[in-house]
Length: 116
Image (cartoon, rainbow, N blue to C red; front, side, top):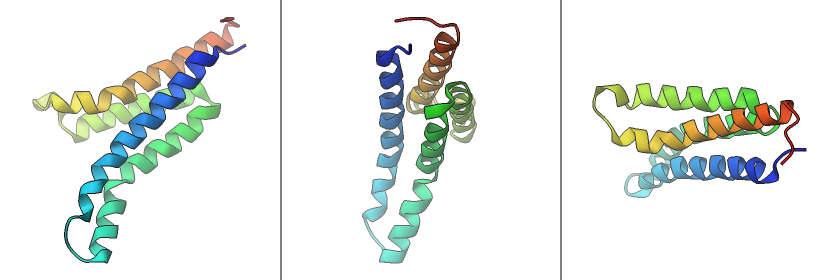
């Protein structure tokens, strides 16, 4: 039996992280034409769309989804240049790393038959 608190808290945290990334796209609606605003909105939401796909995979396959969330955090750290002195990006990307670890832990607990 799966631990329902770990099961739902992991998924809710993933959804909140995706919504957090979605918030970054709201600055596109300040100026310009409607076409420019929509293009900007779609471009800024590419990371959120990728995370939604990863969450859909992780919902059924926790281990694969956990690894993908950790890879997404690593890819984001390369993109935001965390290793060259941008410590604020760690705050933005840490929920993805946490979600990945929680999905992997959840899968490991379920495979071992842990009851809780």
